[in-house]
Length: 237
Image 1 (cartoon, rainbow, N blue to C red):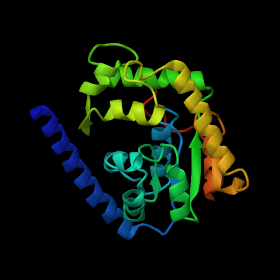
Image 2: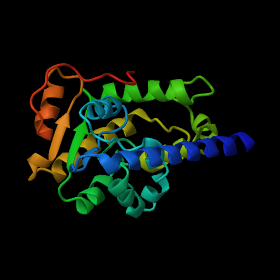
Image 3: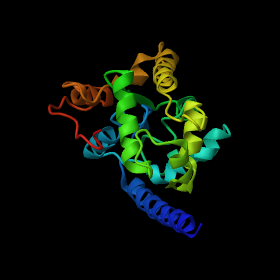
Image 4: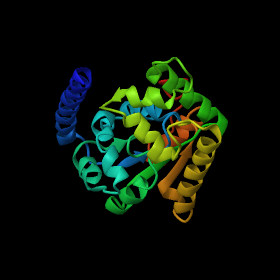
């Protein structure tokens, strides 16, 4: 219990510092429309955020945004929207990679744009996800982590990752990384987003950061002159 409280306190302190820093940056930042990366975790979202930093955007803090997970569970997007108004120009991962968040964001910011990051295949995404989670959150050493591993892990709050698998992937605690369920989830999530924007193609960029032309396509989507080179690769698994 003591370690859990200390971890939560450290998280809150870091979130407070990052909130202060980002709001200071926003005061002097050029006015820009909001950009949201709504690809699932382990689809190159960290590489995308680094590219956006390199392009001069203020990137919202995932540390802060993670604390809105249970708002998402309750279907309450008010704090998420308010956070986006003041704490950055671009956002990725929790809770923007969760189903239906993009719809609430789209209603709140009608001029914003969205980037859906994807992998070569659902299988590639799944292997990347379980290896990354196994390295970080598996006290038992199992890959993927077991339900017991996730229940013991403190990520902001103890048990958050177990709640994540249950609420997002809708898998049982006895098999939180069920392969068939997660492959189906990946495909369904990406297809639902593409269907939602099917009549507004200029508002959504589907992007595989591993493609040789991905960085140039991102720049063109954002209205920057074409730039060569690859994405800065982060958290590769």
